[in-house]
Amino acid sequence: MRTLLLLLLSMGLSSIFAQTNYEATAKMAAELEEKVIEWRRHIHENPELSNREFKTAAYVESHLRKLGLEVKTGVAHTGVVGLLRGGKPGKTIALRADMDALPVVENVDLPFASKVTAEYRNGEVGVMHACGHDTHVAMLMGAAEVLAARKDEIAGNIVFLFQPAEEGPPPGEEGGAWLMVKEGALDGVDAAFGIHINSQTPVGVVRYKTGGFLAASNRFTIKVKGKQAHGSRPWAGVDPITAAAQIIQGLQMIVARQTELTKEAAVITVGKIEGGVRENIIPNEVTMIGTIRTLDEDMKAEIFERIKTTATHIAQSSGAEAEVEIEGGNPVTYNDPELTLQMLPTLQATAGNENVVLGKAITGAEDFAFYAQKVPSLFVFLGGMNPETDPSKAAGHHTPEFYIDERGLKLGVELYTNIALDYLSQ
Image 1 (cartoon, rainbow, N blue to C red):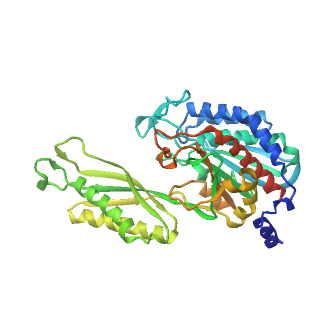
Image 2 (cartoon, helix red, strand yellow; image 1 turned 90 degrees about the vertical axis):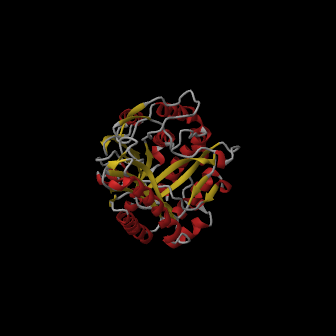
Image 3 (cartoon, rainbow, N blue to C red; image 1 turned 180 degrees about the vertical axis):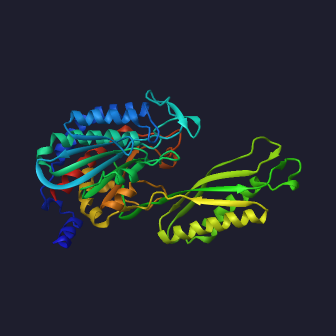
């Protein structure tokens, strides 16, 4: 029976099930569009860093309570979980939106541009929704309103996950999807769904992929220890800065010359290097931190070992020492193949067949991966770029110029809604 079901769905015969009223969804989403944009702008103008989303959480909580949902707060520090019980018995699904912003100073001329600053890693930084999480929250708030109004036709339950710290908790803290799962946010859930806006995909387009979609990410720290000396007499000490520079080059050779890139992509990036106090003192120690992105478990293990070998041996060659620490991070974001095939007709019916595009795996990472480890899951990208813009010229995520065309939000509300109704009706 399951095989027959999947075969029928792969042929696009979604009408074999109790048909979701897509026109009703589109009409309600259109009526809510201005409110969704208003919510998004409020959140965009008032961004908060990971595990500090106090005002955002309160904003979401107030909305969910007005809709009559059962609400839990303080999940994974600042997360909000809303439960909508349908009018008929059935399964339970989770719909997720992430709430946190980034330590980025906004450089976009908008009336609702962020001017917020906050404390981050012992310094004051600008704060910006430079990855579109503000749109995710607004779209899911809109879907919650549509679904609450149609709860009598829902066969099952819907859990709304408003998650903190997708970008990673501050050092020394736990957080994000992993902690949401640990604290029971997915208990009793049969499947999970997530949507991510994309600034370089045209409005109206939905990108998906079965299997591994986004890379695993791991943070690494390399401490290079030398011997302090006067900058005019480098031979009197051991320079950890020059050793660190050689290590950085060596790390790139791991990807360029030692990794089978025809199998899967991989990336090693050093994002920060710190050492020394003034121009004429060779310091005792240099610390660098970075990220590793992989799409294959065996390749990941091999790259980990090569990083340790490369760093320690290069340091030793100049008389220094290197300590390498690689932290556990996000696993590969995996779209369950059967669930993806099952929901593909919903994506197509909502966005239009020609607008649902099979994509390729990317080296970006998502902690939605922890939900996908727990239950069958589907994660898709939603277009947020003006269709007249050249994608190569659109600002990327995590940049000061990041920009989202708000015309894409209505489709996000429809997708969340129709995914929930279709899955539960099946």
